[in-house]
Image (tube, rainbow, N blue to C red; front, top):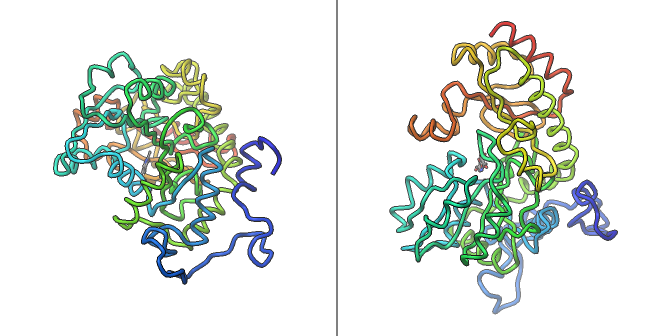
Length: 385
Ligand code: PLP
């Protein structure tokens, strides 16, 4: 490939074999569970689907690594498998984790429900206030975990400060980059040790599969792969094929979603029935100034509140004709939801409010529809809200 290709080019060509097997342009699905090996091959080097070492998996891993600008990557059966495999690799009994308080609900629930029985401790930190992190360190702190753009309040973590803090204190830095995608931010070249994704979202982009991804140095990914092999969260070849297909249009999709989210955020901010819009691309957003230093786009996700509270919010959702009322994100179709009832429903109301997840907060994942049509749909639904 040419030197220093842009992400649009990488999405199509990176990790592709040329020529592919039998001259194929599209890498085929190798369906075999197991492959013949030389006697004496080590367990984790056997070619077996659960061991994440078959041709279709290796192809996908190469593509994911190239898109993340990382040495290596491994795909998992879900975003949660990526997150839990990573944490199980980094932490053993007695270890401590610093973790951002504005967090995907599933990650939050995993820590709250499982960390104690695993012998891990953790402290929630405010990812916007680096001056408070040092006080939370313990002699057993091993890692710091943040989300680039936090679900669902769209706060942007202090990413350069996280990298510097982790280096200063000998911690492994981990980031869930699901909302930003590598199109808007590439954590590994920026100094993070590990990036995790729910590939169910932007990486695949079509709301038709569940997968996860982890990228980092070859050494760290080899360790994570061994954990994954033991827990059994590998991705099957068919799903991996669909994910690789989705990745080829990642840059185009995310560019359209960035533009749609910004256009809608600007429209909604100016609307008299809207009380608040959370989108870091707006100069009025609390994180805009620092986020523009490292994000190349602000993503396709925004959240909002109406001045009329829950009843008005319900009426808005009922009046919209384009977005599906559904809790996922990152697909080509717009999706809209109440996080307090879906992704963050297991948190206590007090814990939710502390991080800005009010009962009437609406989260919108912009699809790739025309911005004018999305705005017209909101305009019409807001008249009835
Ligand atoms: N991380 C983030 C930011 C998410 O939004 C999600 C799912 O919504 C996950 C991780 C978990 O991903 P999955 O549903 O693929 O397990």
